[in-house]
Image 1 (cartoon, rainbow, N blue to C red):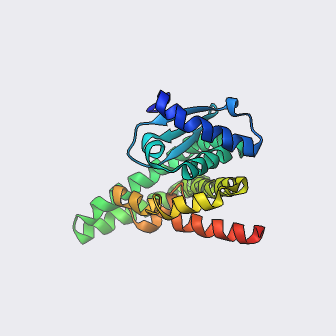
Image 2 (cartoon, rainbow, N blue to C red; image 1 turned 90 degrees about the vertical axis):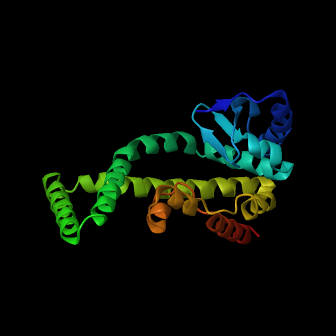
Length: 225
């Protein structure tokens, strides 16, 4: 997965913050292992096997409070069982994502051809889709819808992990992180990379954009106050 054990310097930075976060949560810090990913992005991930990974850029650049908020967010994923469910969801969504990818490729190539040829290709695809739905009694629709449903669950898990970090007293640090280093909309970046429409990219995004996360955090804080 491109991860390595923290260097002595990285460990010296991460360990006190990790122990502080787990102490606030009442969780045994030794249950989890910290890893580092060499990357120029600010990111972190909770994965199966009780792993919490943080990018080297996050370790080097983020202030203590914001780095603690990142760790608390990832701990929230583990405590909420999101790490394993996300892994299962990824595998189950692969067939549907492949279908959507192939459709985008075919439609894009159809647009490059003459109008009549494009119409024939699109009508053929439509007829094939209707035939497939009929012979599978509509079950194929679950395959096509799976990536959207799983992505929606993933976005909800991100908001829940934010609320978990907020509950540990790190709301202001997480807000500062989302307003600053993570202010770039990930879904728009994903759309730029894939060339897909912004709407489709948002529907398939595993993370809500920073504005949505900030709005949800503020609403949660208002309800708690």
